[in-house]
Length: 305
Image (cartoon, rainbow, N blue to C red; front, side, top):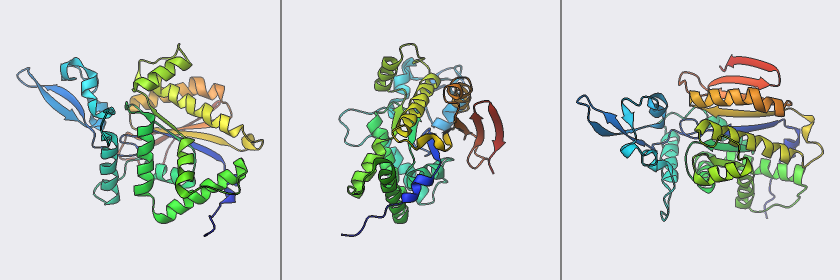
């Protein structure tokens, strides 16, 4: 049997973790929001828009509205449909990935960062305003691994995953490649914050939290992930001796502003030893987005090259 490579040097790494919005951040999904648009004669006509355009027009209630004033109808492509063998999310993710891999479309701002996160085997969270089940998002990440990573990158990922299991879990024998990837994916968080399951879980954890706004739900999901990784780090006695950083990226300026304020006023006080980095990926002219660093009392604004 061929020996399974184990990268024991992962124990020398700093602790870097990432939180990603999905749409227009990792992938430019073809999913559409179904609205109605006011016509010159005052009538309303069906009008489907991308998520990127929706962030611009969503407050223009004079000219855009959901069908029958029902937002569930507007976002019907952003929900799982019972009984379908393949979720719309996975179909759209496959189409978006194929467009990038074939060179037909440029990658979204955080595409390469997410790719590197996976190759390095680092912990991450997907926090999106979609309404899918967590397992649907997890399947999307597995699809990304299978279709985007090269064979060499996949082997690097597996060597890193075995390295973490060796260094922190004390394992010397490992499962199959699929077993190790499944275990890794199970360590991460997948929060679709408009799903009924997420809202019920959120209010069950903290009845006083803001479960009505998308920004409030994303804030809760971010804190959950930070607490999750801190809990994992505390499993070993070597954990907190090196820098810890958590990066968050989103293409919606409103979400970025809400998360930045939340980190400054809440998370940086609860976790003063953690450096938080917020990436605003709404500007297509910046490669990786505008980077905002918050660490305790340290505030630093800079633009990435």
